[in-house]
Length: 484
Image (tube, rainbow, N blue to C red; front, top):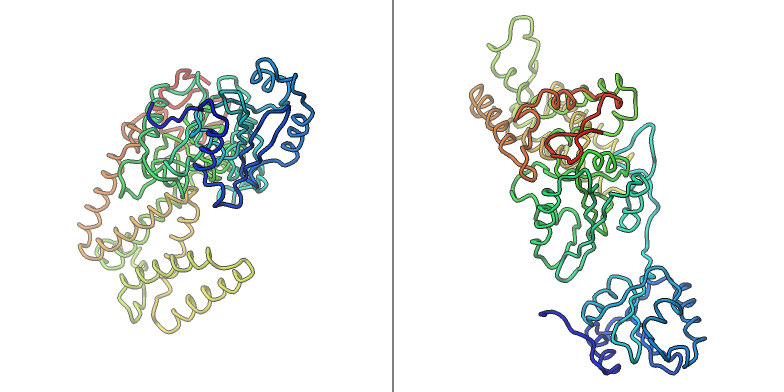
């Protein structure tokens, strides 16, 4: 088979092949230990920093106590079942695969006289503690969150779901990076056709590596490269991931990323938050409706305000107070555009500013940019007021990716409205809605259950149902077990 390099009968050739393949002498952290136990030549290949030293020393002590007669018969079986006391142990007959596995963390043990390489998975990675995610905080609820190590993340997920049908299927993606990827789903709930489709998509990912982890995978899976709207939801909360698994969704867990991908995900999934389910149902309904209102205001409020400010005939007499009393030195449309770009600059500055200087940045943005800009006449007070309302709606959006897409659409609607007036606003809004309607997330309508319309499902989207009454799974996922 192409790409395979089987072990030869010569111990020295096998060892030299791995040394040459890994270029052991050119990297200080690649270690080759040339050993001899029970009068047999042995070699250990490992990455310094990936191996638990105490476990490796323990295993080497066991091997050092062996006598020649201990390995006289069926050496491989004796080593695996008696003399290497460790849980995660496997064998490999392909030299190239064994060498690539060493780069991922396991230790390769080459023994003279046997036709297999023993792989000892005694790896460890630098990892931070599973703290609460910054983007998905709740007042009440668990404070654990995913980290950058795939084994930790799968353990956090399984801790929430003690179901024998929970499947964690491993894949390696990236010709050079060989990044570990896990497909996670409940076998007796998830639609097996969707699982196979996702596997096929991942098998078709052809790239050197995944430097941006989940974002690289998303760009291969989403299909429409220039679509600003996210068709995959991200979460850093194990409880959120578990709730989606129970619905029939499929998770993608990628080594090196604290964000777990949830597929498929409609437009409405990006507008939900765990806080709604951490409060009483009535409070959860209120929070969801307020959130929806804030998100839709973040898209349409500025274009609509500009339209009503410039087309006074659209307003009844009682609403003529809408619109700036003093326009300022700059035309209204440019005030909005400058302010929009200014908010993005401040957001990027906040990301790159050390924590100790965030207070100073806040003073600069509030006093120097906001207050002084109004006093000198660059901006009107109404512009600052409505922009602040829109920014709050943007920050109220649970999905960071959705908030960025909405911000871009808001600016496009604003520019079209300024150029073409009422007709421009109506046509641009219609085209925007049609664009969302035709989008697909893994062959499913992005606007489901609004289009195609499903009354019961749409009611569940708008109204946070009490858990005892939420006894059915979303039909668009085609779950094998539709009842909870």
